[in-house]
Length: 346
Image 1 (cartoon, one colour):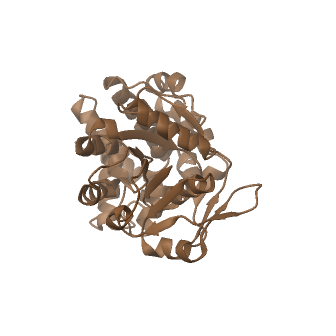
Image 2: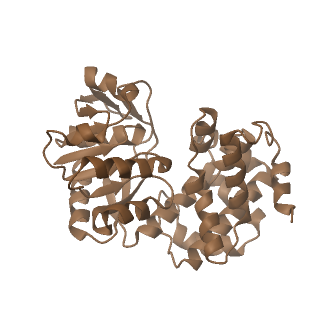
Image 3: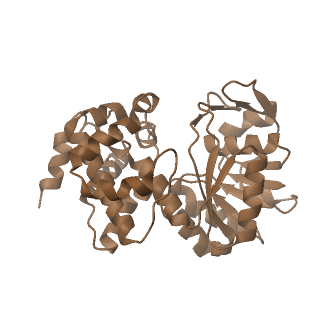
């Protein structure tokens, strides 16, 4: 199979490496800083309990080069950050006369709709992955836990779904197919928003956020808002990443926030509690933030459905201000009560 990986970050390198090692012909599109080492020495996959394996996928810096003198692609995996989706769409339109089925492995809500608007729903597949991955150095991708599950859903094309399922299973992934892509992506959003935005705003780890009464109750309220918005949108949660969302979310809506906070603490215990989440890493690196597609999506859809989501709206506004440097970087550092006070203003 001829597979295009658009976005050679950690997830792109991980999926590209496993597909290539399974015998698929893979082309990686990404920044030269990440791909120069792959061109010269190959891409090395480091997995727990296994010897490192190296493969040599094709590497290019733009989609025009990816499609030049190449056989038609059977499948494209989109792994860029949500804020780069529009740019990827524009580049695909300019480079390809025929766009292959696109599997979006991106976090956040809204990417599928943007792709479907550009290329039609029959060319879009939704996916979610929960494998902890990092790039220890250029040319390497490291897996920290042997979790190879991928959730997959189609926006309408069952043939493309079967093609993607077969390719991913052939690369060693356990694929769980869902009927409603919205349930898949909103359930993954619940995982992504937990102890993420506040970590960036407060400068804390997830464990610190969940150990503090004020901060943990804000996390609980954010989840309750998301649960209400999903119900208003008639989106049924799915079981994903060990979270029993179908059973959990009706309870989340009804229980007091302090009880919900107690229950959520165990989900960020252990290794995850000390690991810096994506939104904090992006802020500290001076990169754009995906918060608009995470907490911001809850706030937008809440407004549209008459289900206000003030906690999600507040953390989105504050984090975007910190990212744009319109809010001083230490404005809410170590001070969840000051953040919570924003919700009390008229």
